[in-house]
Length: 218
Ligand code: DX5
Ligand code: ZN
Image (cartoon, rainbow, N blue to C red; front, side):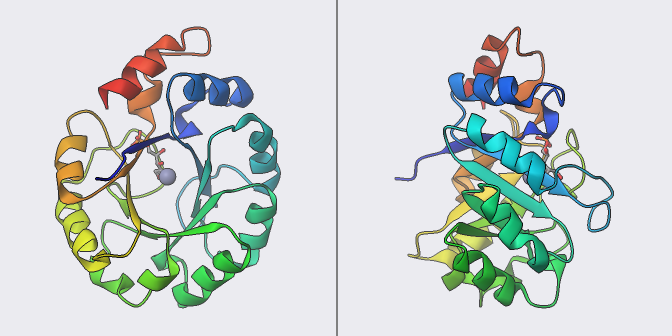
């Protein structure tokens, strides 16, 4: 009996109105707020540094889920923790020492996630499972919202769920999540869904009810 969480990605929000957008998605039923941090190096796009994340913090009443798509990642963990992240997720591919990275996240007292790119097999995290609260299976190549879901992610979720066994670890899926892709992902063992375009499409801070409809449709 796992509860399903929806974490809208503010990468698809109106960048001139983050405070209002965050309040709107939370009022419309978002469980978490997902913040995509990109560095123009690990991924070909640039987004939010620690000061931006710190500015989001007072608007987030639920849970701030910070997805770090940056390399190196270790030098910035403390800054994102201080900015107010509740969960910090780093990529397995971000450096040679993902174990050390997870230790560093744990040392801040925040929850720790490890993320896998579509080209990375599930097996690489076998020695990391005792250090994580969440495994993020990327179902697109990270960098942009609005990409097409990669179907092999479903089988990867199944493999990760099997590896997790009786441990209490969430599985998050990020990229191309919509009402069509979520069913098989839940069946495979995922319990937390990031959605950008599927939540924000057709809505705005002036029409937040559309966000609610979109969230409930997922
Ligand atoms: C992609 C980001 C995602 C993205 C998802 O690099 O990690 O969180 O915002 O957007 P959609 O749901 O539109 O694929
Ligand atoms: Zn993300």
